[in-house]
Amino acid sequence: MGKRETQRIASLALQLRPVFSFCRRFAKFHPFFSAMISDVQLGICANILGIAMLMLVVLFHYLSANQKNK
View 1 (cartoon, rainbow, N blue to C red):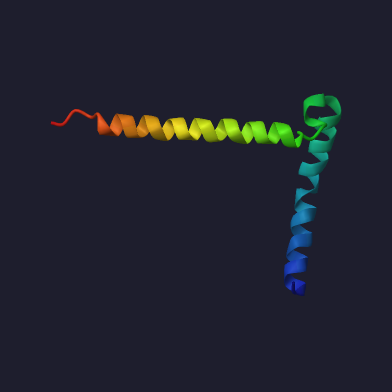
View 2 (cartoon, one colour):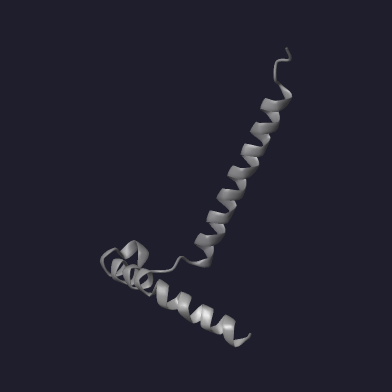
């Protein structure tokens, strides 16, 4: 990585510092955001999203195949 890229990343980190501090302060007051999710929870979430996407694809194909032709 060159000097220019390093400076750009450092300036971006300085610009995002208020956002990170807000997130840390918010996490102190709201316990839902203070802990990371576990691997099992992440796997369940990914499976649910995958099933939902598959169902949307099946619904789209069903609706497009059963259109009334003019």
